[in-house]
Image 1 (cartoon, rainbow, N blue to C red):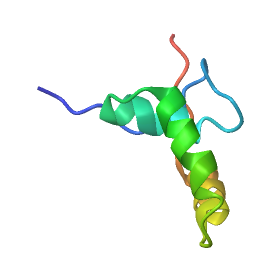
Image 2 (tube, one colour; image 1 turned 135 degrees about the vertical axis):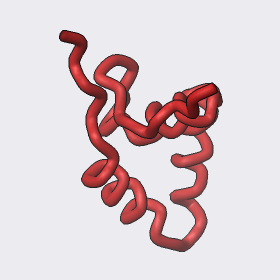
Image 3 (cartoon, rainbow, N blue to C red; image 1 turned 180 degrees about the horizontal axis):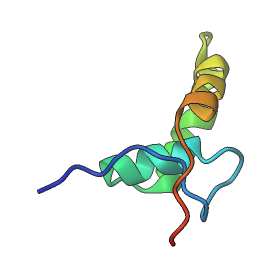
Length: 65
């Protein structure tokens, strides 16, 4: 059984696709991940920086040939 890889999907993105990619990787609901991400911004810390780093380093989904 193979583990799904982490990528930013081309469909179902809101901004950069980081939350959708994390949700698909772990089998979670993308809306739940987005709500947790937005709520976490209210807590002091590097959440926005972590999102931007994810946006830069998590690759896009490959296009089907």
